[in-house]
Length: 457
Image 1 (cartoon, rainbow, N blue to C red):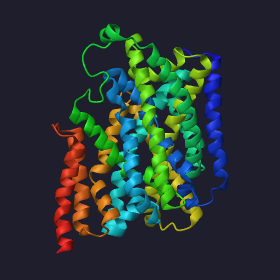
Image 2 (cartoon, rainbow, N blue to C red; image 1 turned 60 degrees about the vertical axis):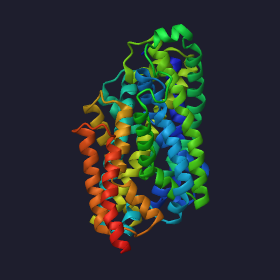
Image 3 (cartoon, rainbow, N blue to C red; image 1 turned 180 degrees about the vertical axis):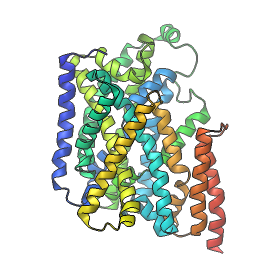
Image 4 (tube, one colour; image 1 turned 90 degrees about the vertical axis):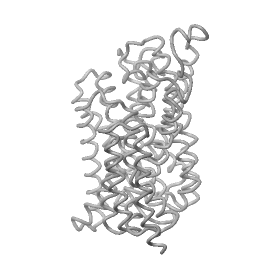
């Protein structure tokens, strides 16, 4: 992948602009609450910017193009499913969550099922989110290594530095403002790039020759059950993800929280389409390209240098923003719900330092895992992440939101542990005709039912 001076110049200028905005936003952060929730004063644009800026990462851009290169339009499920999830969040969950006045998902579960629920949910959710962080670290390291012509280890160091600038100092405020700026860049540059790719695709018989077989232009190219499983995993996974719920908690009031979720959906849903078009274009005209580099190779070699440079900057920002936002969610949970109580940390400044250190540790761990598994599939990691973080948490969380304290705590705890273990087992070791998420949710429901009946008796 050859880059001209113009490519590099526009890419660096784009990255510097957005990261500079995040650093500027960090000036007012003085406490753990200000870092994690932005002072609970965010308007709808900041809420939407945080949500969209996190979900539009390596999976939504590089991963979608990578998967479209192999399967076609069904790669759109990631951003389409994300948008549907944010609509569901805005309609049913956002106002209730914001009205709770809490900081983390585990706090909500603790209030319903006891202290052990907080530790269990923090560990389970953090494990699931970690795989999404890895899914952003993978393309980030690959792109930086190819663009800067440096080793993957050096690229991981550069990625770490960029994430530190993006979110380490400013937390939610940096993620919100950075997300707004990042989405403006991605929307304009990727939409233009995708339109050019779509316009150049072969038509009629030429398309059939380039794409033999069925399903390339179908959302259900991998089968109806596979598509619906991807949609379900995105919906329940996003509803159980601390970063997105944290953005809801940061809103100035419940109405703003709901409107922010709807705005994020409108931003997120279309982003996958230009990446699909680019993946199909590269399949037709450059079938030998390394799949992980489908998107950056197109941007570098098939667009005017200024547009390609800006788009490459946007892709890097999508990766940095997603990795930073996901790490912020994990850091907030681990620091607030596990480490601060265990270490008896109550002082605001000490808690702020603790959250920042955990965020940094998560980013480092994601980069190390990505370096050890360079050929892992980005979107597959994201779908696995969504299933793992939600199989054991989704139903207890939903009951806590809509029917507080309706389940006996012992049964809720057993449900969280066993259903998560079952989902992990079927995701990694066993093969089943049913998606691991559905198996985990079925086990969760079966274990919650006796607890529900016991509490009502």
